[in-house]
Length: 640
Ligand code: GLC
Image 1 (cartoon, rainbow, N blue to C red):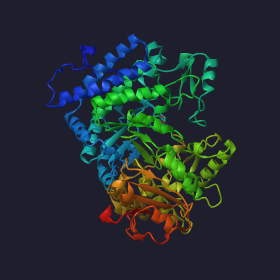
Image 2 (spheres, protein in one colour; image 1 turned 180 degrees about the horizontal axis):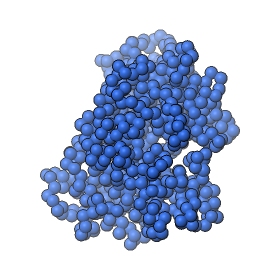
Image 3 (cartoon, rainbow, N blue to C red; image 1 turned 60 degrees about the vertical axis):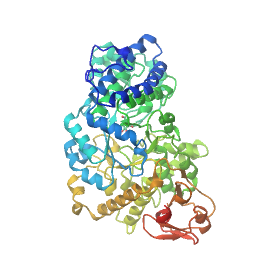
């Protein structure tokens, strides 16, 4: 399993301070030694928690020891140089110039090599961080958009080769773009060699999954679990006749959940992560990481042991590939996603699903007032961490994310959520959304699919509606970019791309996975006027954000309310005192007036400059915000 890095014959227990076979470049050996001294005790501590049996743990530590040393030795010189560079700027991923982009390779550049050709589009957009949805060999046939991985080390031949991947990583590096790859860590495909071996009776392979042979036991376990795809893949277990038992499959039946209580699985995770880091990935997206530890009788999500796995993994990555980011994909409600930062010792990045939902809720209700407090609450991160901010991604929006922020009975919460979803699915009077219900039969779990443009009302033939939809796009990006974190643009949203037609392949999430033609966005003259317009706007906003120190992830945030601020307006103040930037967004389609007394209480300045529109705003006069208008009010240049 660990063949890629296996060096063989080394004394595993002589790890700290062990001599290297090859002389290390000057300065490097001691750096590595320092990192081991700093982080290995964390590995040992967390693994003690996870694997209390001494013999089992010693064997595991010895295997990891070999893996870590071999990975260090195999790490290419240019990546070691990058590690040193990043160490000098530990806040690099928190800086305001960090703009992310996320895409499916086959639907964007076609192949990994084709993607290299699209770099000019990304750099012109200000992109510095590129997340590729799964690119490794998937399950044949349906594969949950590649999230059922049959081989975590082999690039899907339809997209290219491992060498193409390394070339792409180099090209991105040269363009100043960090490559983020998915590590699908909760499950393997049924096609994976382990699952196939398990099906043929290999007991060691079976022990890497959760296989239950007693139907009553399955029912007992189900009783405390949730369902991720209640319509398309109800429940959490799949009967496999060859095993005369049920395999734990949280997602689709062909995605077999791994058993992290088995140290083999942890070693494999480490090996895959270090392999990808050595191929040039600067960030690793840990898919569905909340589910990795099963604690029967609980919801089996976000268990303390899952956090111990993350802390140990982070310590190992910090030894071999310091500066490489771990990103938690834990789609949680409320503040639960913040747990994946683990006081700064787990992931550096985590999706802020709650914030995403709150921004859409504000738009749906044309009012920021009910959500201001929650929005401020979900903005906080521990030092050295950053939120991954997004409006849309390849997945649906699950509206349940809003539940913890709504006061009242479950019935009240349901009706608030229904009103919001109806707005984006075009179901209420005057609703503008062109989203599509997802899992509509599961009434307890509303979710909506659709691209950003579709959710704000595109395409439309209604007079004036297209302009309003474009204003909504500007408002949403201006809001997102004002938050602390690394904002990620979903493929095509920068072009105002509307929903893809559903072909029956995959599930309804295909609506927001459009097939883009690279030739179009590489040659702007081929773009439709609306796409050109939206692209120009997004580029303008990213370039302004990049130059604005107040938007650094570590810069303070306040979401003020109070008399004089209309309910429709979301205000976000970033930075300190006289250098702070104030974002004001009118979430309603009618003009509103901000009272001058409220405005002047926000700033010591008599006038502020709107970075977006360029005009100067006096703070001693009422301020009228046009429908859906967004402003980024900064102190006059001299005092910024
Ligand atoms: C994550 C992915 C989603 C996938 C699931 C199972 O939530 O974003 O697309 O279906 O994990 O891998």
